[in-house]
Length: 207
Image 1: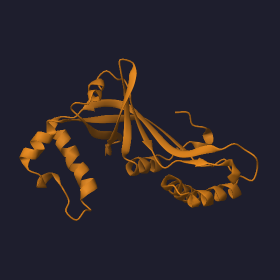
Image 2 (image 1 turned 180 degrees about the horizontal axis):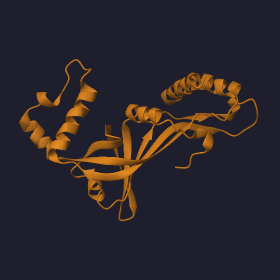
Image 3 (image 1 turned 90 degrees about the horizontal axis):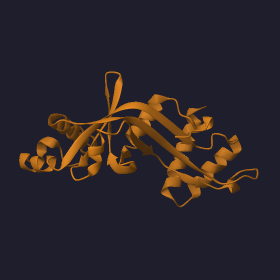
Image 4 (image 1 turned 60 degrees about the horizontal axis):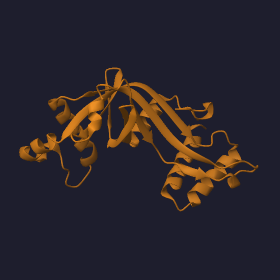
């Protein structure tokens, strides 16, 4: 990913937090030299000093069969993004687009049966534990689980490289930066409003 120096993020703790918060990612591989992609919820796990991404695909999705032949899998995480009008600047300029994105590269392998069950158990705990009537692994019937497991393929990706870009108008003067936040807050668009929160938090953290 091309990242101008203004927008490079090198704080890995911050990047890891972003990945966990924006865990519905895009997994990209190639099949017969053609890129293919699937949008999936992924879990980030640290084992020793190494990070792994885990998830599962439908058995009928041919992408999982490309894992063995692909040297590298690309996983794309994206946060809020929005159009930035140059009318919000003090000086003449052109419009742009602000965003947050993280690219992860690594080698994928297929999970064994017990590994997949453990991963699905953690996934349910993550998204169900806070609910009034949580649907957890041990609450589901063995018959249902057996049927569902036959229809999916679990995988893990060993993280080899992470590239992170936060294009948040860091190259603008303070007055322009604050005005961009104000204008984004006024937009009738949830992405714009979320981006304004990110920009506001970023400048507060840098003070």
